[in-house]
Amino acid sequence: MDFYDGNMELKEIQTLEGHTDRVWSLAWNPATGTSDIPPVLASCSGDKTVRIWEQTPSNRLWHCKAVLEETHTRTVRSCAWSPSGKLLATGSFDATTAIWENIGGDFECVATLEGHENEVKSVSWNASGSLLATCSRDKTVWIWEVMPGNEFECVSVLQGHTQDVKMVKWHPTMDVLFSCSYDNTVKVWAEDGTGDWHCVQTLGESNNGHSSTVWALSFNAEGDRMVTCSDDLTIKIWETDVGRMELGDDHAPWNHLCTLSGYHDRTIFSVHWSREGIIASGAADDGLRFFVESKDGLVDGPLYKLLLKREKAHNMDINSVQWGPGETRQLASTSDDGTIKIWELASLT
Image 1: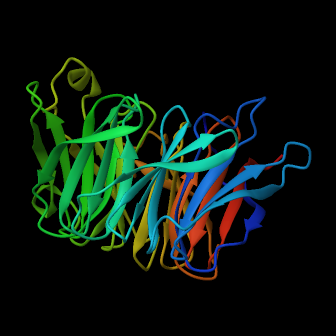
Image 2: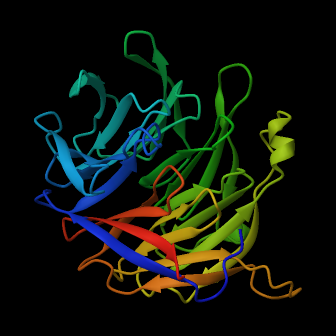
């Protein structure tokens, strides 16, 4: 798809209010947003709750469908739906990860995963839903195997980061795990065939990596490129030979492709790559930015260009940006201002 300069606009669709503290993270349910199932998203907050929101098909307005509370005793920092959309994992500063299941329209906590020494910062399911990764301020990444009857067994504790691990994310097509940290690095983890997990690559400042905390990462639809964002005010694009990876070469290296700088002037907390190739970023400058691959053919020209920007998208820091499933170019953002905003990227006609 070609994106021509200046023919896109960002429409603010709705502001979702209800959380009584900063909203850290959100997750769209991947099994929703189809022609017959309205989109659903979860949000989590410093108010210790998770809220489930659903869009009403008739008027396309969102409403809060459920509040998941009285389980976590501190901030809920991260939430992620399993690929089937049946389970929701939530990670909290209370050092636990809760697993919720929608049973007849009511969400019940069906498992609590304990083991981290302190705050859980991020949770992520693999593509098949058989593995869940969690990470913590305790510098470790845990991999849990999903067993029958909503049992979860820790199969590996990954130690290698020297500081708080901010985010974990599975590769979209393979069981290779990525983590990013306050130690300024991204680590790539793979299983060696005998059940042992190892760090197979570290992306740090010495190989064109970030010079400060790496807050988030995301993959393109094909899985051969990754985008990272940082406290160093840059966004970096990385690429790999995904064909080598799919042949079983977990060690196919990730290489730095380009660095986008000068677009945010405060910490970039979140970045997310849409299925059609648009990168969204959100930052402590309260702004949103959108980037696309530059196809102008210049040999030494920029590889990615700014498509659109929105200043003051929120009243305070933007903590998370996430593209919705389905065909519409819907984006949700969360902020320290306590709100979630739903946006639509639309073509000017």
